[in-house]
Image 1 (cartoon, rainbow, N blue to C red):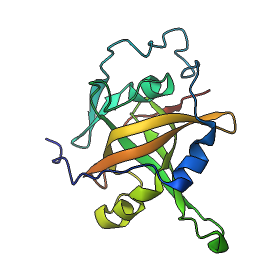
Image 2: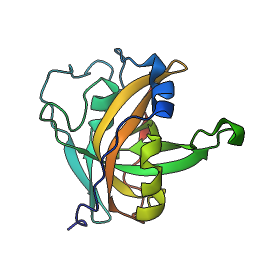
Image 3: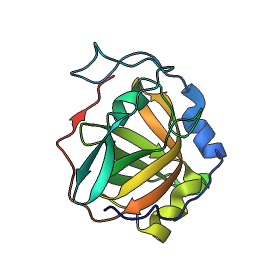
Image 4: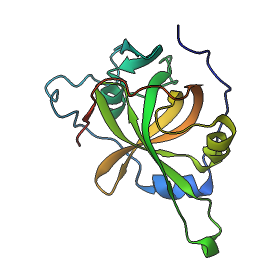
Length: 174
């Protein structure tokens, strides 16, 4: 079986998150090979769980998030995804703003970019979240940044670290 659901945290949007979210909004679109079958936000689509290395991902959840469905709200279950890349985005030290982190997250079928709310930065070091970690997305929003859809992670928790990459994900296109 997979690991237990690690620690949990809560996060409220911070002023620097608000700056990133200034252009918030979500639209249509979908993932590259399945644009003809994009679920509506009100539909109750349940992602398929796939397993790799003893950990489970919710296959199809990237497409759901891309189409505007939000994890952890309105009765939706949190989504389990794999972090396949994680990079700091350094701010100008004189600005006083916290550094941000850009992630690439995968459900085993698709991947897309995500940004971490700055209030979650301490979790990266405390929980050792890094590339190939499996995390549970408890709350997120979809945002358009420079004409690209980006998931802003507001609350998440570590499930397990050091898993092999699960699946062969394809990019979820705008």
